[in-house]
Length: 258
Image: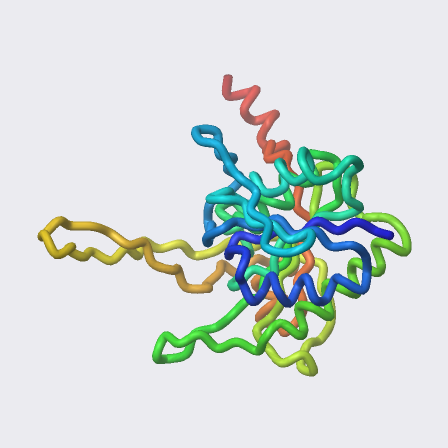
């Protein structure tokens, strides 16, 4: 039986995680290790300054007390598996992980940790939209669940399509399942970033700040399709991500500059 390790960054009680686990159970034995609380935008961080503790929620389902997604993968492999699982899947994240947001993402970082340990990995996120009243419009996780099952079945029937230290970053468009146009292989796009932080005061008059959510706006890129464009065009976006962030195109120019 195939072994599947699952985590997320929205917390162990996330509806997205629940939908992912339910979709994957027919494909193998699923083990879940997820953060106790939401760890969105924690990046590829490990907890080094305090001990962590597994708390059993149910059979083969654990929450890691105040751990990050990277902690969950690192410690699950150390404690729960004699042999590595066949695949690690992180998600289904509530919200997009596209463009440079991948560097912030706890969801994507769990995939990073897995491939560092030599295990194929997929990070999957459900994009959502906001209406004029700033309310979230969602269509559930049916399309995301169907998409991840198709991809994992294909992987289990053959090979993982990427070489070592690379993972798949999947984003699901916020549309009903029957409106999806299929899969599209994409590049990570370039996002418009602003500075949105609300200023408030606590009951004692002390000022504090709350970082807000940026808008889902991107810079158009000529010559290839990005994750943002694919989602806008009603495709499931599949982006191959590598951990080597060296800018090879700039090495010669930098040598000449020196």
